[in-house]
Amino acid sequence: MAVTVSRPRLNWRERMYLPAIVAGLAITLKHFKNMLLGRTKVTMQYPEEKWDSHLPDHYRGAPALVRDSDGRVRCVACQLCEFICPPRAIKIIPGEIPSTDQFAKVEKYPEEFDIDMIRCIFCGMCEEVCPEQAIYLRKDYAITGFTRADMVHHKEKLLEIGGVMHGVVLKWNEKK
Amino acid sequence: MDYFLITTSLLKIAAILFLVILPMVSYSVYAERRVSAFIQDRRGPNRVGPAGLFQPIADMFKLLLKEDFTPANVNTFYYWLAPCLAMMPAIITIAVVPFGSTLFGVPMVIADINVGILYVFAIASLGVYGIVLAGWASNSKYPFLGGVRSSSQMISYELSLGLAVIPIFLLVGNLRLTSVVRYQIEHGWMIAPFVGDWLNPWKWLLAFPMIISFVVFAIAIFAETNRLPFDLPEAEQELAGGYHTEYSSMKFALFFLGEYAAMITGSAVIVTLFFGGWHLPLPSWHGGFHWALVDGSAPGWRGVVGGLFNIATFFAKVAVLLFFFIWVRFTLPRFRYDQLMRLGWLFFFEIALVNIFIAAIILAYVPS
Image (cartoon, rainbow over all chains, first blue to last red; front, top):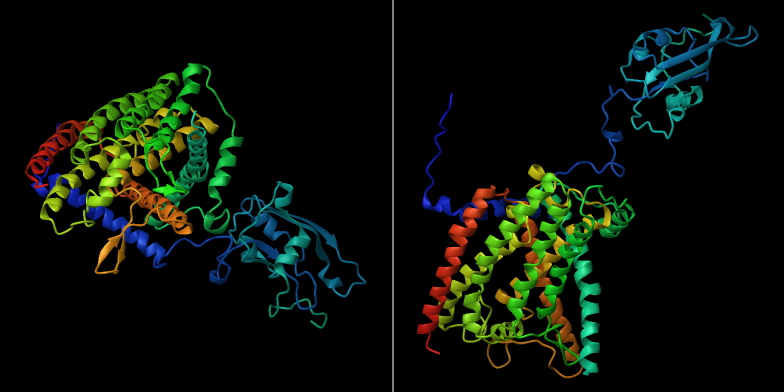
């Protein structure tokens, strides 16, 4: 069905367009002037300014392994995170801790711990599932690399991002 | 042979082209991007060099190093000819525009010919051939539509462009552009005659048709240079870039820079006709208030400084107009094609025509 759109009748001032054009020019000039005077809020200028100091505590960045205050890698290679990981980004090869070691009763440690950051979706399931409080999502978000191999975080890289975690449960103390 | 004339002309051509026009073209692209960004609350290009000032150089390298691709089914000869035709008229129009008074006794205009404004119109209208040939030679639908639109648009607006300046030449009585500037130095700028006997009401009455002329001429220049309210030939949203869709690399750059060169010459002509050219009166209080004329005629270093000051004044005025061009582009939406034609034929043409009569009637009654 054809619909007739009723158009408003313009008076002679509106039909001349020039007042409207001048009003438009005034608006754009105002924006230009505010920008020159630095009154306009603009986008964060990324490489110079970063989100880092503004990130909230619950921010989920790159997952990382942590050490405890004794310097031991907290991970016991139970592989729960590997099983829960939705995109299957985590690969763990467990190794056995020799009986002479100070932490012999832990029995297992991760010989290799790889997280493929191309696959990782920063969901935080690994952190949630970990019974040892060994894997945490840190605030690193700019994960870059030139090849796919560069984008796999090996154990050393994960420990470097994670650092040492103080004040968590220390259940592998030999006195317990 | 007058070797002095030839040498000074060549020097003037080289200096004005390589020291002023071409840098101005590339920096007007930068200005366009920067001003548009500021108007739209963005930062614009600010990475290359301080405040992004080396951006044009980076752009140039990018355009030079891109693959120069020629599609298989184009008409090669015209396909190559079109970019040259887009750039050349805009640059050679500047030859008759007086961009300064004198420097070391040499008049600062490359060719002071007695058909000045006719030369400007004749050469500037050649610019349409670049666009039409590009659209036709590309053998592609969108460029073709752009070319067709461009030719009809330019023809429509050249009419009001030519008629709009007639009142000025009725007043000056001479087509030479240096005479127009000389007249404005003696009697005040066309649209603001505050120099000379500024209390004379007849002069201000004459400024009225001049302002109408200015508005019509400026709008027609917008249409001639395909700037935004009238950029129908390009119309990237409708025509995918219009006439230069099939062009790449430096050939595209020639179209792109040709548009800016045309803007600069258009602004230069507007400045010459309506804003007193290189003339900037300075207030002086020697024996009562009056406007002092600064030009290159004074002896010694004062003349050199005066001449350079005039050249700087001229290009500063051109820069202000270029800002206006950019400002308008980022304020107004594009006209629809039929509105454009209606505006050209039914309004500007008539306004310019009536304006000639108004100016002629006033001139007939002005006590001289």
